[in-house]
Length: 365
Image 1 (tube, one colour):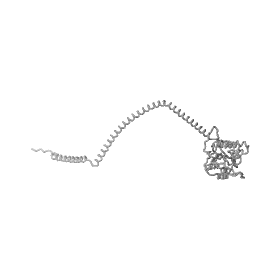
Image 2 (cartoon, rainbow, N blue to C red):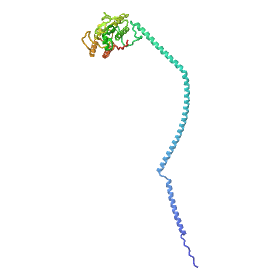
Image 3 (cartoon, rainbow, N blue to C red):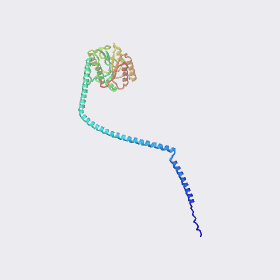
Image 4 (cartoon, rainbow, N blue to C red):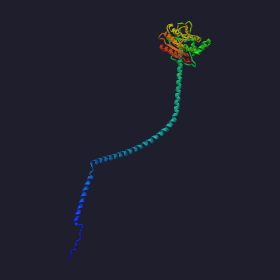
């Protein structure tokens, strides 16, 4: 009997075993590789560890700062609440004080008015005291003066003029320029009558000034009054070179009476006028000069026509050189139009001799 042929098998048991072993080896190989890779990834490099540590520290710092900020915010919130409470208390206190001040203003208004009234009364009494003291001082002064001079409205004249002394010489300019302050009026009045000349405001002002000066002389002192134009003359005739006693004031009154009737005329010669200082014996210890301009001549008679400003200054310095040293010369200047050098020249004269200088206004004395 014929044997049946066995079919051919492609895969046998041995082949499958081989394939299984091969696949197993591949799987084992991949497992080994994967294990090595995982091991390497679990152990990071050192530089990555440092960065990680730094980031962790920064995170901790930021968390710390955040906690501090939260604490600060909480503290500020508490302080804000306390400040608002204090502000509310202060506002309430201010309102209370305002109400109290309103009450006090009403109660103290009367007191303030009373204080102001008292102050006004005190000031009024002080003024009355000053007035009474001034009257008393004037009464005492009048008691020591031999003559009395009262200005307009009982005016008192306060000056720096030195009118004291044991021997007082008064030199009064009665030249034609004493007729007015303006040259054109001087020329016009010079040709008028004597009565008109005597009524000239400038001349009457000069006479009033002498009247005031003599009212300040002490009874025990001596005096002499000279007028001068082209030449000097004593007001009281026959008293050349002689000192007159102030005494009871009768001679002073007579001198003022005669001076009021003296007519201004001719030129101005201060050289001979200042020479009177040397002719008086003993010499004066105080000289008062009433004048309005620089001299126009240096001798009683002169043939000179028009005199320039430089020549007038020359005449002045020649006259000034004859004044002895140690005697104060006080100047009362009645300014004349156009004679601009007179003020500085006479101021220097008063300054050099230790006297005083006054530029007289229209309403003095």
